[in-house]
Image (tube, rainbow, N blue to C red):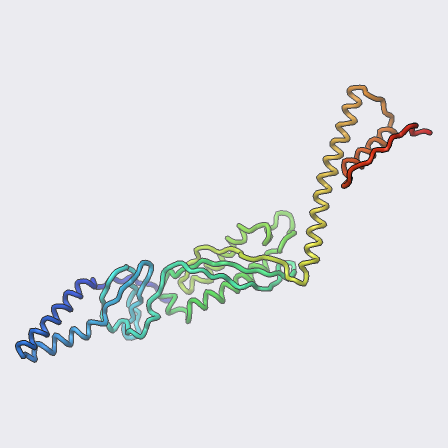
Length: 287
């Protein structure tokens, strides 16, 4: 595997001064009609002219001489190097170091329990090692795309969508842990290409259309059961408090049958979904 070598270049502004001097020397040779001055100075001027290049912030230039990697220039500004190190046709040797977004397409996969789900992720990445990015993989942008899809598919297969076992992380509830797991896997996959993962997180998560309605009904049923549980627990506590207060204050002396009747009526009132309609009992329970 290749390893990045940071290389420094000749200051471009200094070379501009030298180029102007060579041009002035050629003109002087013309005025003096001195071929021994004209041809060498003009030849050096023309040969060295393609060696200039400019780097913007967070840009780099990879230098290759006769098929051998010589280093990477990362300093912004005007530079000059041996023109043979980067023929003008090899524009691919200029690599951006800026962060890039990969908005992955929605994938249909199976979660840990085998349920078909739709999942997508957003990955923020940047090139950290230009030598690996250019020479260890064929096309690092395509490499990032394919490996990201593979990592997301693998991630979905090791986590359930929801309703995991006690303490088990799920895709729907454990977003932070899932995002961190995705970032770790992507970092491992991208290391060969010299790519750094800045951030990775899920951008879309849903059941596949063929089971979405069934899962929605299950979620609704679970929500109703959970709400009912809270209502019943609260109602029982209120009934217990009512009976205790009546007994402590001696408001009425109730036997077990009357207590059971009161408990039944209070639970109906407290747990019912509709407003209760009171029924006045003119007699007794024993009539």
